[in-house]
Length: 285
Ligand code: RRO
Image 1 (cartoon, rainbow, N blue to C red):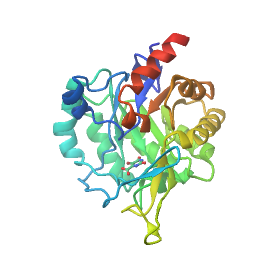
Image 2: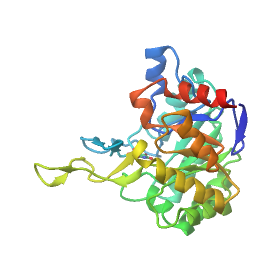
Image 3: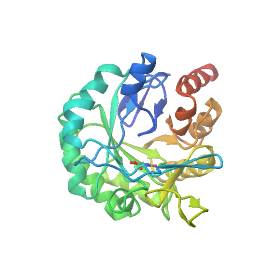
Image 4: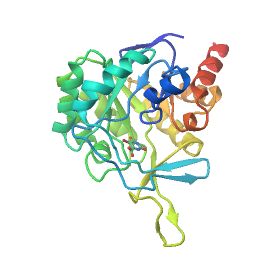
């Protein structure tokens, strides 16, 4: 089942969604950092350390969950010095570093650092986080800004460059074409879909951050539609994700035009989901 996705070699087509699996904790708990995964996609890293959003950060939804995590993290210095070398020592397969920020300069600063870091095999530009006020998803909602960002990142690295898109935009095909024109090697479709939850006692948002992103089986049809639209719009490889829980869900995304898939929300409920999906895909092959 080995393949090349967006210039990155993978032993099979199953990855994790950024921010949904703690490989360091899993190594301690299970003796395996990324069971069933062909590599490991890190939580999105920003130039400066960030605390993330106030609690509550999670709300249940029919067929999924809504998160408002708010891009917490150690910042690129600590990430490169400590977490990334540790990850490279424990995970099977390549480490894909997810990068976020609030300006082109933010992204380029991290991309340059990761280009020089031997433990980073590929980069994912997250232009689709629903939980920050500026940057990220607001860049990825605009084709001109997306193209400029990808072009600047492309100039800063020779490593495989993937771009993670949101379906919460008016025309994902236009954004996908912009990423291709800017020099991306692959698209990652899709991030969580903008959503929120109401606290009925107050009538205000249940989530500390106000807004959130919906993930899980509820967004499968949205993900399928986005992958189809990106497949028609570009020649780029696609990592498809959004509610993958079974090998059949993965097959649907592959049939829609993805080359690989990622699992996110299901990993919270079933840490063996990646292995199950990988083995299910192998049986059909
Ligand atoms: O941290 C988050 O709140 C977050 C991120 Br960076 C993202 O890309 N997608 C998401 O649903 N949450």
